[in-house]
Length: 384
Image (cartoon, one colour):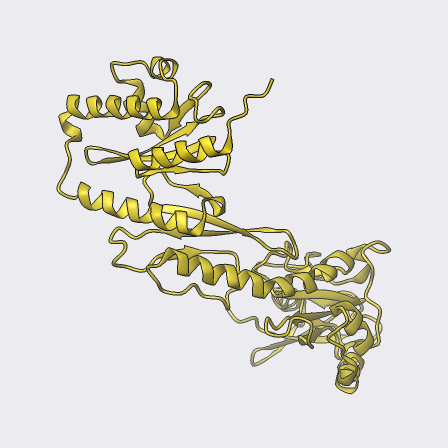
Protein backbone atom coordinates (compact mmCIF):
# COMPACT_ATOMS: atom_id res chain seq x y z
CA UNK A 1 0.00 0.00 0.00
CA UNK A 2 1.34 3.43 -0.93
CA UNK A 3 1.54 6.22 1.60
CA UNK A 4 0.20 9.11 -0.45
CA UNK A 5 0.33 12.60 1.00
CA UNK A 6 -1.96 15.25 -0.58
CA UNK A 7 0.01 17.81 -2.54
CA UNK A 8 -1.50 20.76 -0.68
CA UNK A 9 -0.44 19.19 2.65
CA UNK A 10 3.14 18.99 1.41
CA UNK A 11 3.06 22.59 0.23
CA UNK A 12 1.68 23.92 3.50
CA UNK A 13 4.12 21.82 5.52
CA UNK A 14 7.03 23.06 3.41
CA UNK A 15 5.91 26.67 3.75
CA UNK A 16 5.68 26.22 7.52
CA UNK A 17 9.17 24.68 7.63
CA UNK A 18 10.67 27.57 5.65
CA UNK A 19 9.13 30.01 8.11
CA UNK A 20 10.60 28.16 11.08
CA UNK A 21 13.96 27.38 9.48
CA UNK A 22 14.89 30.11 6.92
CA UNK A 23 18.17 28.39 5.97
CA UNK A 24 16.46 25.10 5.11
CA UNK A 25 16.12 24.24 1.41
CA UNK A 26 14.44 21.34 -0.37
CA UNK A 27 16.77 19.54 -2.77
CA UNK A 28 14.02 18.05 -4.96
CA UNK A 29 10.39 18.65 -5.89
CA UNK A 30 9.10 15.64 -3.97
CA UNK A 31 10.48 17.14 -0.72
CA UNK A 32 12.34 13.98 0.24
CA UNK A 33 15.77 15.59 0.52
CA UNK A 34 16.71 18.72 2.47
CA UNK A 35 19.84 20.72 3.27
CA UNK A 36 19.88 22.87 6.37
CA UNK A 37 22.54 25.47 7.11
CA UNK A 38 23.11 25.64 10.86
CA UNK A 39 25.74 27.69 12.66
CA UNK A 40 27.08 26.19 15.87
CA UNK A 41 29.06 29.06 17.31
CA UNK A 42 31.56 30.08 14.66
CA UNK A 43 31.28 26.73 12.85
CA UNK A 44 29.07 26.49 9.76
CA UNK A 45 27.40 23.10 9.31
CA UNK A 46 25.33 21.62 6.52
CA UNK A 47 22.84 19.12 7.95
CA UNK A 48 21.27 16.90 5.30
CA UNK A 49 18.01 15.02 5.75
CA UNK A 50 16.40 12.25 3.72
CA UNK A 51 12.66 12.17 4.45
CA UNK A 52 10.97 9.54 2.23
CA UNK A 53 7.55 10.06 3.90
CA UNK A 54 7.47 13.87 4.16
CA UNK A 55 5.89 15.57 6.07
CA UNK A 56 6.14 12.53 8.36
CA UNK A 57 9.61 11.85 9.74
CA UNK A 58 9.11 8.09 9.54
CA UNK A 59 12.13 6.43 7.91
CA UNK A 60 14.14 9.66 7.90
CA UNK A 61 17.93 9.76 7.95
CA UNK A 62 20.24 12.55 9.07
CA UNK A 63 23.75 12.95 7.72
CA UNK A 64 26.28 15.64 6.79
CA UNK A 65 29.97 16.37 6.60
CA UNK A 66 32.51 15.11 9.15
CA UNK A 67 32.05 18.13 11.44
CA UNK A 68 28.27 17.73 11.49
CA UNK A 69 28.35 14.02 12.22
CA UNK A 70 31.03 14.47 14.89
CA UNK A 71 28.98 17.04 16.81
CA UNK A 72 25.74 15.06 16.49
CA UNK A 73 27.21 11.69 17.40
CA UNK A 74 29.15 13.05 20.37
CA UNK A 75 26.17 14.80 21.94
CA UNK A 76 24.44 13.46 25.05
CA UNK A 77 21.36 12.44 23.08
CA UNK A 78 21.59 9.61 20.55
CA UNK A 79 20.79 10.69 17.03
CA UNK A 80 18.80 7.50 16.41
CA UNK A 81 16.58 8.26 19.45
CA UNK A 82 15.98 11.77 18.15
CA UNK A 83 14.71 10.41 14.85
CA UNK A 84 12.58 7.65 16.39
CA UNK A 85 10.82 9.97 18.86
CA UNK A 86 9.88 12.51 16.17
CA UNK A 87 6.58 12.35 14.32
CA UNK A 88 7.09 15.00 11.65
CA UNK A 89 10.02 16.56 9.87
CA UNK A 90 9.27 19.76 11.77
CA UNK A 91 9.57 17.86 15.09
CA UNK A 92 12.84 16.31 13.93
CA UNK A 93 14.34 19.67 12.97
CA UNK A 94 13.33 21.25 16.28
CA UNK A 95 14.94 18.41 18.19
CA UNK A 96 18.08 18.63 16.08
CA UNK A 97 18.14 22.37 16.66
CA UNK A 98 17.85 21.87 20.44
CA UNK A 99 20.53 19.20 20.31
CA UNK A 100 22.96 21.50 18.47
CA UNK A 101 22.16 24.33 20.86
CA UNK A 102 23.14 22.08 23.78
CA UNK A 103 26.34 21.13 21.94
CA UNK A 104 27.15 24.82 21.51
CA UNK A 105 26.55 25.58 25.19
CA UNK A 106 28.67 22.66 26.37
CA UNK A 107 31.61 23.56 24.11
CA UNK A 108 33.02 27.03 24.90
CA UNK A 109 35.51 26.67 22.05
CA UNK A 110 32.59 26.88 19.64
CA UNK A 111 31.54 30.28 20.95
CA UNK A 112 30.43 32.74 18.33
CA UNK A 113 33.21 34.87 16.95
CA UNK A 114 32.81 38.45 15.86
CA UNK A 115 32.57 37.39 12.25
CA UNK A 116 29.90 34.70 12.60
CA UNK A 117 27.05 37.15 12.03
CA UNK A 118 28.69 38.16 8.77
CA UNK A 119 29.17 34.51 7.82
CA UNK A 120 25.52 33.83 8.48
CA UNK A 121 24.51 36.74 6.24
CA UNK A 122 26.81 35.57 3.42
CA UNK A 123 25.62 31.97 3.69
CA UNK A 124 21.98 33.04 3.62
CA UNK A 125 22.67 35.19 0.54
CA UNK A 126 24.33 32.26 -1.25
CA UNK A 127 21.42 29.96 -0.48
CA UNK A 128 18.96 32.58 -1.69
CA UNK A 129 20.88 32.96 -4.97
CA UNK A 130 21.03 29.20 -5.44
CA UNK A 131 17.28 29.01 -4.94
CA UNK A 132 16.89 31.67 -7.66
CA UNK A 133 19.07 29.64 -10.04
CA UNK A 134 17.00 26.57 -9.17
CA UNK A 135 17.90 23.66 -6.93
CA UNK A 136 17.36 21.27 -9.82
CA UNK A 137 20.44 22.90 -11.42
CA UNK A 138 22.63 22.41 -8.32
CA UNK A 139 24.83 19.32 -8.64
CA UNK A 140 27.05 19.56 -5.57
CA UNK A 141 27.64 22.04 -2.79
CA UNK A 142 30.58 22.12 -0.39
CA UNK A 143 29.63 21.84 3.30
CA UNK A 144 31.18 25.24 4.08
CA UNK A 145 29.45 26.88 1.08
CA UNK A 146 32.75 27.98 -0.48
CA UNK A 147 32.00 26.28 -3.79
CA UNK A 148 29.08 24.93 -5.77
CA UNK A 149 28.68 22.98 -9.01
CA UNK A 150 25.80 23.95 -11.31
CA UNK A 151 24.59 22.02 -14.34
CA UNK A 152 22.56 22.47 -17.49
CA UNK A 153 21.65 20.01 -20.25
CA UNK A 154 22.38 20.77 -23.89
CA UNK A 155 19.04 20.13 -25.60
CA UNK A 156 20.61 19.04 -28.92
CA UNK A 157 23.26 16.62 -27.65
CA UNK A 158 21.59 15.78 -24.30
CA UNK A 159 25.00 16.21 -22.66
CA UNK A 160 25.09 17.58 -19.12
CA UNK A 161 27.57 20.44 -18.69
CA UNK A 162 28.98 21.57 -15.34
CA UNK A 163 29.99 25.00 -14.08
CA UNK A 164 32.01 25.07 -10.85
CA UNK A 165 31.81 28.34 -8.92
CA UNK A 166 34.15 29.38 -6.13
CA UNK A 167 33.03 31.99 -3.61
CA UNK A 168 35.89 34.27 -2.52
CA UNK A 169 36.41 34.85 1.24
CA UNK A 170 35.32 38.46 0.81
CA UNK A 171 32.17 37.59 -1.15
CA UNK A 172 30.07 39.47 -2.23
CA UNK A 173 32.63 42.29 -2.36
CA UNK A 174 34.79 40.39 -4.88
CA UNK A 175 33.76 38.72 -8.15
CA UNK A 176 33.02 35.01 -8.32
CA UNK A 177 35.56 32.71 -9.94
CA UNK A 178 34.40 29.92 -12.24
CA UNK A 179 35.84 26.89 -14.00
CA UNK A 180 34.16 25.29 -17.01
CA UNK A 181 34.73 23.05 -20.03
CA UNK A 182 33.67 25.46 -22.73
CA UNK A 183 36.10 26.57 -25.47
CA UNK A 184 38.88 28.93 -24.39
CA UNK A 185 37.36 31.75 -26.45
CA UNK A 186 34.55 32.00 -23.86
CA UNK A 187 35.44 33.86 -20.69
CA UNK A 188 33.10 34.02 -17.69
CA UNK A 189 31.97 37.55 -16.81
CA UNK A 190 33.49 39.27 -13.79
CA UNK A 191 30.45 39.57 -11.58
CA UNK A 192 29.29 39.09 -8.01
CA UNK A 193 25.90 37.85 -9.21
CA UNK A 194 25.56 34.08 -9.21
CA UNK A 195 22.44 34.27 -11.38
CA UNK A 196 24.17 36.50 -13.97
CA UNK A 197 27.17 34.17 -14.17
CA UNK A 198 24.97 31.10 -14.55
CA UNK A 199 22.77 32.78 -17.17
CA UNK A 200 25.79 33.82 -19.28
CA UNK A 201 27.24 30.33 -19.08
CA UNK A 202 23.90 28.69 -19.93
CA UNK A 203 23.57 30.99 -22.96
CA UNK A 204 27.12 30.07 -24.06
CA UNK A 205 26.26 26.36 -23.85
CA UNK A 206 23.30 27.06 -26.14
CA UNK A 207 25.50 29.00 -28.61
CA UNK A 208 28.16 26.27 -28.82
CA UNK A 209 25.57 23.51 -29.09
CA UNK A 210 25.41 23.82 -32.91
CA UNK A 211 29.22 23.51 -33.10
CA UNK A 212 29.17 20.32 -31.06
CA UNK A 213 26.38 18.88 -33.19
CA UNK A 214 28.28 19.67 -36.40
CA UNK A 215 31.50 18.09 -35.12
CA UNK A 216 29.76 15.04 -33.68
CA UNK A 217 29.22 13.57 -37.18
CA UNK A 218 32.93 13.90 -37.97
CA UNK A 219 33.79 12.14 -34.69
CA UNK A 220 31.42 9.32 -35.56
CA UNK A 221 32.39 8.73 -39.19
CA UNK A 222 35.98 9.94 -39.68
CA UNK A 223 39.39 9.09 -38.28
CA UNK A 224 40.08 11.93 -35.82
CA UNK A 225 43.79 12.31 -35.09
CA UNK A 226 43.52 15.25 -32.73
CA UNK A 227 42.22 15.76 -30.10
CA UNK A 228 42.53 12.24 -28.71
CA UNK A 229 39.32 12.55 -26.71
CA UNK A 230 37.20 15.38 -28.20
CA UNK A 231 35.39 17.38 -25.53
CA UNK A 232 33.12 20.44 -25.45
CA UNK A 233 36.21 22.67 -25.13
CA UNK A 234 37.51 21.56 -28.55
CA UNK A 235 36.25 23.38 -31.64
CA UNK A 236 38.92 21.87 -33.89
CA UNK A 237 39.53 18.47 -35.47
CA UNK A 238 42.47 16.95 -37.37
CA UNK A 239 41.13 14.34 -39.79
CA UNK A 240 42.72 11.65 -41.96
CA UNK A 241 42.19 12.52 -45.64
CA UNK A 242 44.49 10.10 -47.48
CA UNK A 243 47.73 8.18 -46.81
CA UNK A 244 50.15 10.55 -45.04
CA UNK A 245 47.69 13.45 -45.49
CA UNK A 246 45.48 15.11 -42.90
CA UNK A 247 43.57 18.35 -42.50
CA UNK A 248 43.11 20.58 -39.48
CA UNK A 249 39.82 22.47 -39.27
CA UNK A 250 38.43 24.97 -36.76
CA UNK A 251 34.69 25.66 -36.59
CA UNK A 252 33.52 29.25 -36.21
CA UNK A 253 30.94 29.48 -33.35
CA UNK A 254 29.16 32.33 -35.14
CA UNK A 255 28.67 30.10 -38.22
CA UNK A 256 29.00 26.43 -37.18
CA UNK A 257 27.98 25.06 -40.59
CA UNK A 258 29.89 27.66 -42.59
CA UNK A 259 33.26 27.05 -44.23
CA UNK A 260 35.68 26.39 -41.34
CA UNK A 261 39.31 27.43 -41.14
CA UNK A 262 41.24 24.64 -42.93
CA UNK A 263 44.94 23.76 -42.98
CA UNK A 264 46.44 20.74 -44.74
CA UNK A 265 49.35 18.65 -43.43
CA UNK A 266 51.42 16.37 -45.62
CA UNK A 267 53.89 16.36 -48.49
CA UNK A 268 53.45 19.32 -50.85
CA UNK A 269 52.78 17.12 -53.88
CA UNK A 270 49.88 15.47 -52.06
CA UNK A 271 48.27 18.48 -50.44
CA UNK A 272 48.63 20.89 -53.40
CA UNK A 273 45.65 19.32 -55.26
CA UNK A 274 43.55 19.67 -52.11
CA UNK A 275 44.45 23.33 -51.77
CA UNK A 276 43.56 23.92 -55.40
CA UNK A 277 40.22 22.15 -55.04
CA UNK A 278 39.39 24.19 -51.96
CA UNK A 279 40.21 27.45 -53.74
CA UNK A 280 38.20 26.50 -56.82
CA UNK A 281 35.12 25.03 -55.12
CA UNK A 282 34.43 27.36 -52.20
CA UNK A 283 31.20 28.46 -53.90
CA UNK A 284 29.92 24.86 -53.65
CA UNK A 285 29.74 25.09 -49.86
CA UNK A 286 26.11 24.87 -48.70
CA UNK A 287 25.46 25.73 -45.06
CA UNK A 288 22.30 23.60 -45.08
CA UNK A 289 24.45 20.47 -45.50
CA UNK A 290 26.54 18.68 -42.84
CA UNK A 291 30.24 19.52 -42.47
CA UNK A 292 31.39 16.17 -43.84
CA UNK A 293 29.20 16.42 -46.95
CA UNK A 294 30.52 19.91 -47.71
CA UNK A 295 34.16 18.97 -47.09
CA UNK A 296 34.01 15.96 -49.42
CA UNK A 297 32.25 18.00 -52.12
CA UNK A 298 34.58 21.00 -51.96
CA UNK A 299 37.80 18.97 -51.69
CA UNK A 300 36.75 16.28 -54.16
CA UNK A 301 37.65 13.45 -51.77
CA UNK A 302 35.96 10.75 -49.71
CA UNK A 303 37.13 10.58 -46.12
CA UNK A 304 38.34 7.16 -44.92
CA UNK A 305 35.58 5.43 -42.99
CA UNK A 306 36.08 4.24 -39.43
CA UNK A 307 34.11 1.09 -40.26
CA UNK A 308 36.13 0.05 -43.32
CA UNK A 309 39.70 0.77 -42.22
CA UNK A 310 42.07 1.21 -39.29
CA UNK A 311 43.90 4.39 -38.42
CA UNK A 312 47.23 2.60 -38.90
CA UNK A 313 46.36 2.00 -42.58
CA UNK A 314 46.85 5.65 -43.43
CA UNK A 315 50.50 6.17 -42.37
CA UNK A 316 49.79 9.24 -40.27
CA UNK A 317 52.11 8.24 -37.40
CA UNK A 318 55.75 9.28 -37.19
CA UNK A 319 57.91 6.88 -39.18
CA UNK A 320 60.56 6.86 -36.43
CA UNK A 321 58.78 6.68 -33.07
CA UNK A 322 55.61 5.11 -34.54
CA UNK A 323 53.32 7.39 -32.55
CA UNK A 324 51.15 10.27 -33.63
CA UNK A 325 51.68 12.60 -30.69
CA UNK A 326 55.06 13.34 -29.13
CA UNK A 327 54.38 15.70 -26.24
CA UNK A 328 52.88 18.72 -28.00
CA UNK A 329 54.34 17.75 -31.38
CA UNK A 330 52.50 16.19 -34.31
CA UNK A 331 54.17 14.60 -37.40
CA UNK A 332 54.44 17.71 -39.59
CA UNK A 333 57.58 16.96 -41.64
CA UNK A 334 57.08 14.71 -44.66
CA UNK A 335 59.47 13.04 -47.08
CA UNK A 336 59.41 15.00 -50.36
CA UNK A 337 59.50 11.88 -52.54
CA UNK A 338 56.03 11.36 -54.05
CA UNK A 339 56.26 7.57 -53.62
CA UNK A 340 57.07 7.86 -49.90
CA UNK A 341 55.65 11.00 -48.23
CA UNK A 342 56.20 9.40 -44.81
CA UNK A 343 55.56 11.91 -41.98
CA UNK A 344 57.91 12.49 -39.04
CA UNK A 345 58.07 14.55 -35.88
CA UNK A 346 60.65 17.30 -36.33
CA UNK A 347 62.43 16.21 -33.16
CA UNK A 348 62.52 12.53 -34.20
CA UNK A 349 63.78 13.28 -37.71
CA UNK A 350 66.39 15.78 -36.53
CA UNK A 351 67.78 13.37 -33.92
CA UNK A 352 67.84 10.59 -36.53
CA UNK A 353 69.69 12.66 -39.13
CA UNK A 354 72.31 14.22 -36.84
CA UNK A 355 73.36 10.72 -35.76
CA UNK A 356 73.92 9.46 -39.31
CA UNK A 357 77.54 9.08 -40.46
CA UNK A 358 78.59 11.83 -42.83
CA UNK A 359 75.71 14.10 -41.90
CA UNK A 360 75.85 17.61 -43.40
CA UNK A 361 74.66 20.64 -41.45
CA UNK A 362 74.16 24.19 -42.72
CA UNK A 363 73.09 26.86 -40.24
CA UNK A 364 70.08 25.36 -38.44
CA UNK A 365 69.34 22.80 -41.17
CA UNK A 366 70.49 19.19 -41.22
CA UNK A 367 70.64 17.21 -44.50
CA UNK A 368 70.51 13.44 -44.84
CA UNK A 369 68.48 10.48 -46.12
CA UNK A 370 64.86 9.54 -45.42
CA UNK A 371 64.73 6.64 -42.93
CA UNK A 372 62.13 4.96 -45.18
CA UNK A 373 63.14 5.44 -48.81
CA UNK A 374 66.73 6.79 -48.46
CA UNK A 375 65.89 9.77 -50.67
CA UNK A 376 67.44 13.15 -49.74
CA UNK A 377 65.62 14.91 -46.91
CA UNK A 378 66.37 17.96 -44.80
CA UNK A 379 65.07 19.07 -41.44
CA UNK A 380 65.38 22.29 -39.39
CA UNK A 381 66.58 22.22 -35.80
CA UNK A 382 63.46 21.97 -33.57
CA UNK A 383 62.78 25.08 -31.49
CA UNK A 384 63.25 24.47 -27.79
